Image 1 (spheres, one colour):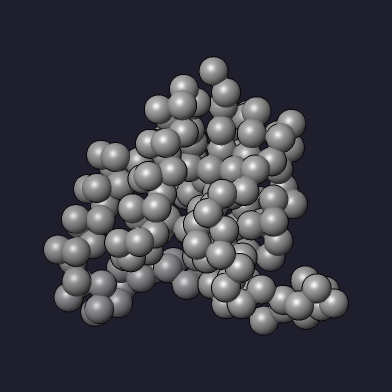
Image 2: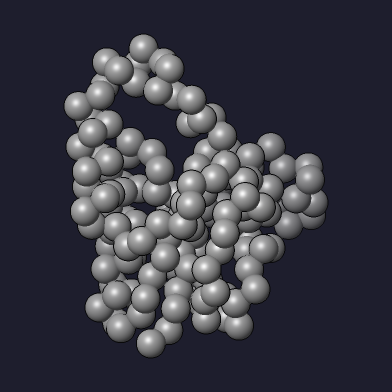
Amino acid sequence: MTKVNLLTIHYGKCYGAVMQTFATCRMLEQAGHTVRVINLINPSQKGNWKSIHYWMDCVREFQFWLFKKKYFSKLTNKAYSIKDINLPKSDVTVVGSDQVWNRDITGCFGNSFFLDFANARKLSLCSINCGSICAATDTMDSCP
């Protein structure tokens, strides 16, 4: 049984992100793999419970939380930087979502979605849409 760490955008109140994570986990599990979702959260989400908008939308927040708790594979510890996550040992690290290389969304994570931290024997990419990725001549430091 292959151990898989999955890095994706799963934390938002976006049906697409939640369903994509659910489907990827389910597909990998049905193929006989053990999946852990890397619980990397956008730093802008930190302390969002203090916002009035959070409380105005608390029913939707609860519904997303309940779905994730019931249907997602196990999550790693929650962190706002990849350095703060206790990554379980894995055979494969998978990155996938339609926006993982969109620097407007993932730029705050540095090169994490390019798997610069992964120590797995194999790396894999799935369902990638480059969004607004940097031009090939740009360095990652010059990306927005």
